[in-house]
Length: 210
Image 1 (cartoon, rainbow, N blue to C red):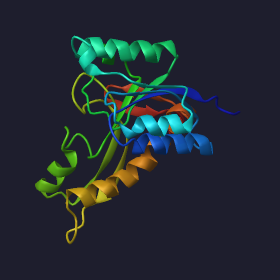
Image 2: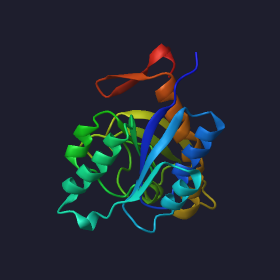
Image 3: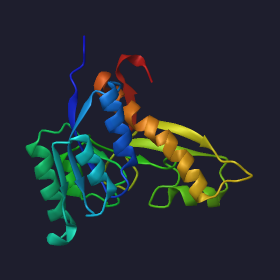
Image 4: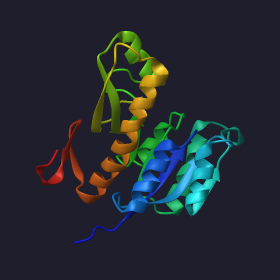
């Protein structure tokens, strides 16, 4: 039986490469989602143009400076997401830490991708921190968002070897992003097609397939 595509909202701040990967997978039929809302917190975010070219119904820059505080900004974003009945909120290169109120409003419905193998190297400099630490394997993690930074239950991970001879942060970041562009839409598809249960912090995929 065919799975009905679900509406998602994507929050982005920059180039929108993960948004592009999701849109392409949706168009190809390999990821049963419809990107219904794209919100950017930066007026020059390339993600806005990507969304407009793809025909996303609601594409909006929301200026954080127009609101009294982070919580008020997040309420405005949340109201737009709720208005358009988005089932999942997908953070794709979104450089703002979402407020506690936003996390609770969309509890267990917000996902993020981080360029390191969590729980190691959370924060804005995951690639650099992993490299400076001397790891031999890095990668990316798709996780649910909770009240703590890069802390929520892990949905999926992909490993990327760190090469001794030519890796710097920029080179490693590019190779990690190549994995992100596969892992993010694949995980979204699995969430829709298969679903999962949470046992404590552990994500257990339904049907017994990890």
